[in-house]
Structure formats: C-alpha cells, structure tokens
Amino acid sequence: MIYFHIMKSVTTADLRNQFRRVSSWLDNGETVVVLKRGKPYARLLPIIEEKPSPTRVDFAAQRQSIWKGRKFSSAEVAEMRAAELEGED
Image 1 (cartoon, rainbow, N blue to C red):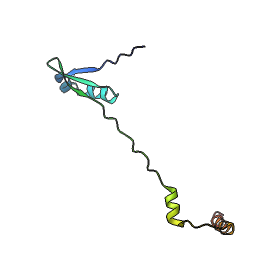
Image 2: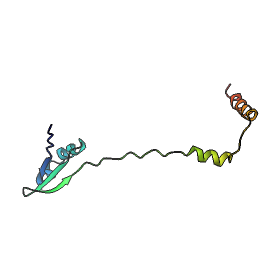
Image 3: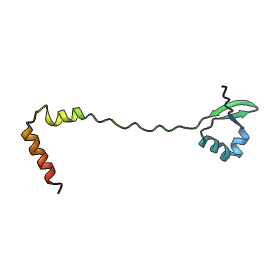
C-alpha cells in the first residue's frame, strides 16, 4: 500500500496576507512549505510540546536514609501499626 503525504505550500505573499489560514494548518499538525518566486524557500513545522517525564522516586534510598538498615521485630511492627490505626477512628 502506498501512502502519499501532500504538503501544504504558500507563497510569501500568502503567508503575509493569510496567516490565519497557515497557522490553522500548523495547529492541525501539518507541515507548510513557503515558496519564494515559485521555489521552496522555507519549511514551517508545528512545535510538538514534550510532556515532562514524571520524576521517579527512589523508595529504597529513602528507606535506607530513614531506617539505616534497621530490622524490626514483629512486636515493634505490631506496636507501630496499632499507633497508626489509633488515629483513624
């Protein structure tokens, strides 16, 4: 299957006089070629904004900095859990 991509083109006069139309093409993601004296002069491309990637939290490093490798007994864990649940009433 063959796909054809027809690029929009405008003259420098069209760009000056009908910028609203050209900007709507760019808003729709189309590339526009600017012609000067009938020959390609410039290519206008829409800016594709990149979404910033979410920062990844290093939970292992946080846990290490807080607890410094300490091991808790089951009694200590039960006591901490009871203290957490106490405020949920």
